[in-house]
Amino acid sequence: MEQTHSIKEKLRQFFIILFPILVTQVTLFSMTFFDTMMSGQASPSDLAGVAIGSSLWVPVSTGLGGVFSAITPIVAHLIGGRRNYEVAHKVIQGVYLAIILAVCVILIGSLTLDWALSSMMLESGVREIARKYLIALAFGIPALFVYQILRSFMDALGETRITMLMALLSLPINVLLNYILIFGKFGFPALGGVGAGIASALSYWFLILIAIWIIVRHPAFSAYHVFGKGYPISLPTWGEQLKIGIPIGFSIFFETSIFAAVTLLMSAFDTATIAAHQGAMNFASMIYMIPLSFSIAMTILVGFEAGAHRFQDARLYSRLGIVSSLVMAVLTAIILLSFREQIAGLYSKELKVIQLTQQFLIFALFFQFSDAIATPIQGILRGYKDVTVPFITALVAYWLVALPAGYLLAHFSLLGAFGYWVGLIAGISFNAAALLRRLYMVQNKRVARVEML
Image 1 (cartoon, one colour):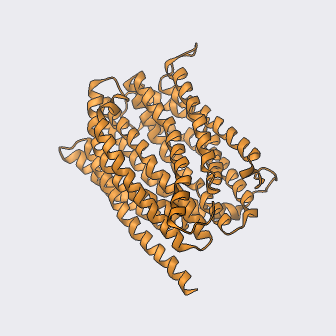
Image 2: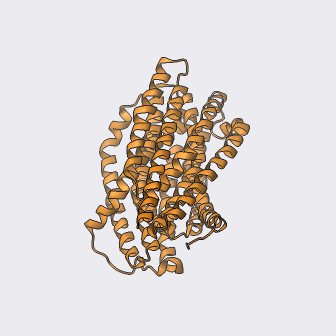
Image 3: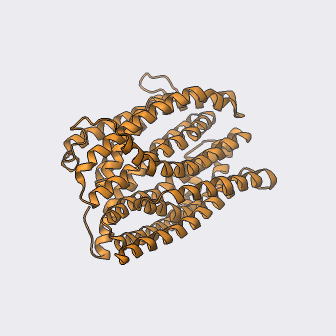
């Protein structure tokens, strides 16, 4: 990355950073997308089982991924402040922390998984698929967590094209493994949704091996000598990363867990409704990769400018990000509205599931407009290292607005299962409004501080 001096230069650097992130996010999410879609082609029970398993796993993985993403603003600030010599130490401490948290997740999961699944009103076949899917996925957790640290480091340097190429390499491997293990090809048994869990775990290990090799060999990263020295554990550095990462992680956890909670509450409905809900939610989550990519790009660019105390430049990047995100939301809404029947057909061969999925997709149209505002702002605030208030607004928006409203509408109105989606729309909209106000306050405070100096 480099300092920019005009709108044209900022736009160019913004899209150079953004495009690879977008491709990377869509590619990485495509692993879950293909897990869900290909499991649905095996049977509705496999789709429902993977849906339940994902609903338990995604809040944990994304929440902790938020903790690990603290490396991005930390490194961006160091680079912006020309303190490159501190980068390797910060990254290795993040790796240590990721390994510790991976072990904790696996241990806690082994003690609570059966209880969590038994507490749901699931058909026995769906419950068993969900259980085995999560057990298979657990073998890839250490690789996934360490990869998230290394990717955050690489992205913070502005080398988002390289992480894009890594993701593009891993996706065909994941799809091929899904094909072999879900449907039983080349002499392997047909494992259905469980095979999707094995395929994802193997793909995570492939990603981490490629990431380590690139960091050691590529000149953009080798100059930092990340693996060139054995650093002892530094609890103060862990504390610094957790101080930034925990609010980010909880913000993401509150957001993703509400979607997981809705999916679990959907277990009160029949298998077709669960499958249709998950199919529509899966595609809506794919679309969400667009504003999420804007968010990551904003963290990198705003963090770089804030680290150098160029707050007017940071504010300009913020405006470019939000406006561009809204434009993309309009385009994706048109695509979703025009092709929802074809999209629904990707997830099932059963007519009832396809029809229900199309109805859920209509509600997904409204998600993205609020997400197009809220999600980039979250990234902007992380670039300023302002993470506590977004954590509070996420808690209020999703658990005090979205879930109660959704439950009431689902059980005390004619909306039925669709009531949960209306509640989610209300929560996301509340969060967007609260974050917009917070951004206004933070930016004015930073600019005023510089003017006083």
